[in-house]
Image (cartoon, rainbow, N blue to C red; front, side, top):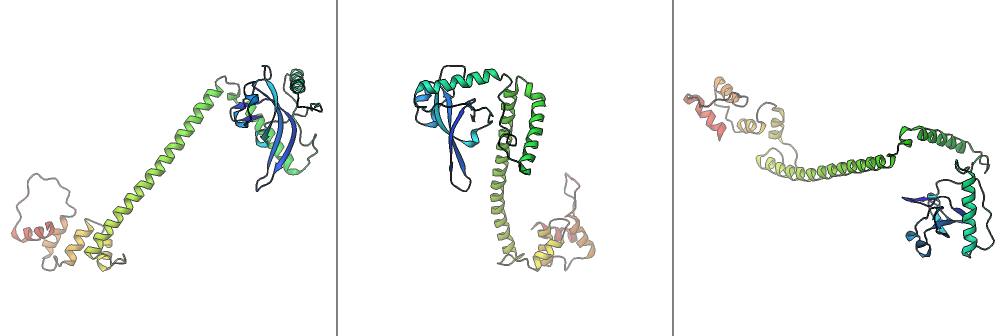
Length: 269
């Protein structure tokens, strides 16, 4: 029986009962070897296991069936009355004797041979368990003396990675909230400039801006709809449009003729 980091070693099953619900839970009453200090505790959460080789006290406690790790095929004959400490300690001696007679480990209960379960699903599960257990036993880490330390470090790493993922998700949520605020402000500007209507539906001006893929879409669209190109010659229009793709770095501003400085001022405005 194991509960988290608490190892109760081999216990003796006394009784069990089922708790109804969507997922039934079986409560198993077992005789466990507890420390002398915790044997007097009434709350199950406060009990502490005691190694079978050390001085402790056998006490009946209720556990969930999920805490049972292995079930042995060996039966321990119980006295009629377990209320006395002496009778419970006699059972401890029986358990200790059984463990001494099986130095390689107690024989486990076989669900097919001992219980008679012969369903195909059970046979398949047992084969899978046997294969996985063999792979686990043959794994090089199984015999590593630092296995516990390595496992704790890996668990710590996994927890840190989970914290990183959670932090990234929180950051994405925060960025989404910021982007929502930016989106609202952008739509408000587009409505004021006439690119979309009050229902955020793109108007003609907005569709024109969408078709422009070189230069600043909004500035170019404003020039078009303000009629800046109407009175310009072809050379003036080309010179004005070249400002949108001009990438040369110049320290001095070239002197422009009057016919070009006028359209440039309109662009700068």
